[in-house]
Image (tube, rainbow, N blue to C red; front, side, top):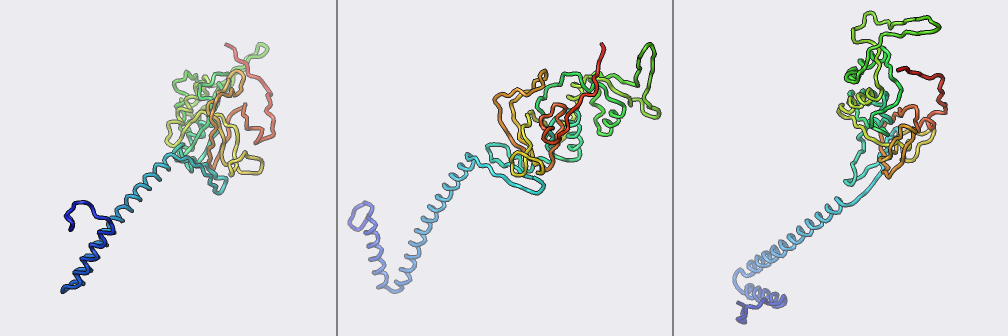
Length: 304
């Protein structure tokens, strides 16, 4: 209860007048100045504590708002380094691949998958982009010479000819004008497994892809590479360093017409210090890297 007998909360002016009157009375007594000083110190501490708590609440509220905003915002920046090491960096909305890859390989055929496997075993981070991950189904590359098998062994990929109905080949027999000529591979001193191999090329390629994918640090993605990129993220031109590629997801490869069928897709970019283009005979990037025109000096005919 207050001096007037009421229980109402006094106004700010009344509280101030009350404290000033009490302080005045205290100064008239012995040691009153010390009492006044202590009271003022206590009131100052109370007000300071209240203000500090409000300040802390304000900081916590602002921090939560800022954190929530950062989680929902989308920002993209571009960084550049030496040797065309430019990379797009995206926040939580997309996976940040800055500095993630040591090499980008275009094409997951015999060359691309084997290279990815070799680089991955060296501890490199490798991304392989292939326009069609389905098993290839066309007549090409059905015979692996003994030298090719020895190279597979050197790369640790000899198991890729197992389980695909591969047949060992030890030489050739030629027929012409009633005459027969047989030539055998010079395999003296080699182990029993060294020989040529005849197989379904598509099954062999799939085994190579599986071997590459099994190596830590190697990732295979289906996507059609549209452009080579320079360090600025623009389309590459002669005289510049290839810093990465732009590729589309969702497109499909028509094996019969040997063309890309465009569908609703998403374009992405990826950068690495090394970009290797080995996307085969029907490469869409060859004309940008070389002026040579592919020739067909002969044809292969198979009899069943």
